[in-house]
Image (cartoon, rainbow, N blue to C red; front, side):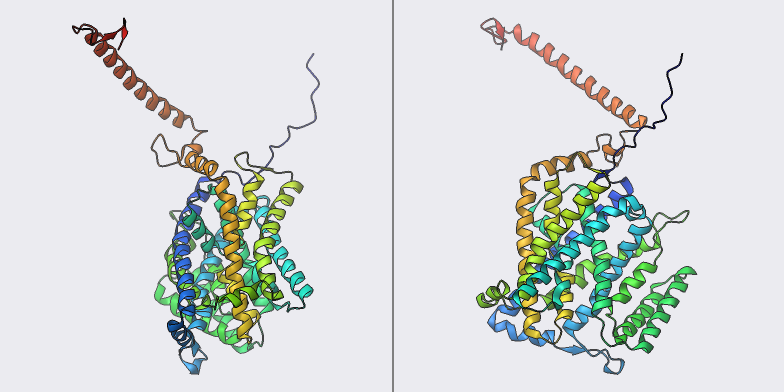
Length: 483
C-alpha cells in the first residue's frame, strides 16, 4: 500500500538579504565602483583644497573673487557666477549619470525584481525620512528654522567609497552593491525633493520649451539617431531652458538619463545607456563633482564657527541627521524589511555589518551641499554654517564607520578573497562555477597535475635521501636516524 500523499508542498527556500550578486550585476557594480572610488578620492582632495583656499588668510579673498566671478551670455539668462555654474551646470552631468544608473537598475539590475527592490527602496526611504525627522525635531526643539529638513537626507557614494579607499577596508561586493543601490535610490528622491520643494516662480514658456526639447531627445533616441554632435547641443538647449524655467537645471540631466535605453538588443554587448554611462561617468566623477566641491566646500572653519555647528539648532540638526538619522534609518529599514518579508541575512554577514554600512551612508556631501544652498538661499551666513555642518557630520559619520568596519576587516578580506578566487583561470570567480560539472572536471585535472608533480618531488627527495645515507662519515644519518 502506497503511503498517503501529502497535499503540502515543500516550503520555498528563504530569501537571502545581501546575498551573493549575480555575475553580470557584480561585474557592473565593480566597474562602476572602481570609477566612483577614483572620483571620490579626487572629491576628497577638492574638498580639502577648498577648505585651505577659503581659510588661509592670504588666499581667502581670491577664493571669494573666483567663486563670484560671472561668466556666460546675459541675454540668455545665463550670466552666472563660477560657483553657480558648478552647482547648476556641472551637477547636471552628475545627475545625468544618476538617471542612467537608476534606469539600468529598474530595467536590467536588481530593482527590476519587485521582491529584490523592496529592500534597498525601503532602506533608502527610511534613510531619508529618519534624518529629516531628526533635523525637524532638533530645529523645532531649539527654536530654529525647519527649512533645512532635506539637507541630511542625501548620501554621497563617491565620498563614501573614497573613505573606503583611504582606510583600506575590503568590503564584500554585496555590501558595496547595497551601498551603491541605496545611493541611486537616494539620488532619485533627492531630485524629487529639489523639484517639488525648491522650485519657486515657474516660467511656463521656458518649461514648455524644455519639455519640447526632451520630447525631441526621446524621438531621436527612439529612431536610433547617433552622433554626439546631435545630442550634446540639444542637451545644452534643454538644460538652458530648464534653468530659465525656474525648475532646478539638474532635473534636465536626470530626465535625459532616464530616456536612454539600458537593455541590450541582439548582437549588442552593452546597451546604449551603459555605453554612454561608461563614457560620461569619468567626466562626472573626475571633473564635474570635484569642481562643484571646490566651489561649495570653501567655508570658514575657525574655532567659533565649528562651535556654532553644535550649538545652533539648524546646524546641529544636520549633524545629528547625518550621523544618527542615516544609521538608524537605513539599519531599521533593512531590519524591518527582512523581518516582515521573512528573509534571512546572508550567512556570510552579520547585522553589525549592515549597521556599519548604514553609518557610512551618513557621509552626505555633494547633494547635501546643494540642498543646503537651495534651502537657505539669501542667507549667506546660515548657508556657510550649514555647509560646515555637512562637513562635520560627514566627517563624524566617516570616523564611526571606519571604526565599525575595521573591527570586521579581517573577515571582509577573507570574503573578498573567496569572491575573487579563480583557480581554474577561466576569468570567472570560482564561486560562480560551483554548479557546473565542467568546472569540477577542470579542477580535477588541475589537482591531478599538482598531485603528479608532488609525487615526482617526493620520489626525487626519497632517492636523494638514500644517496646521502651511503656517504662515508654518516653524513646521511645522525644517531641512527635520517639527518
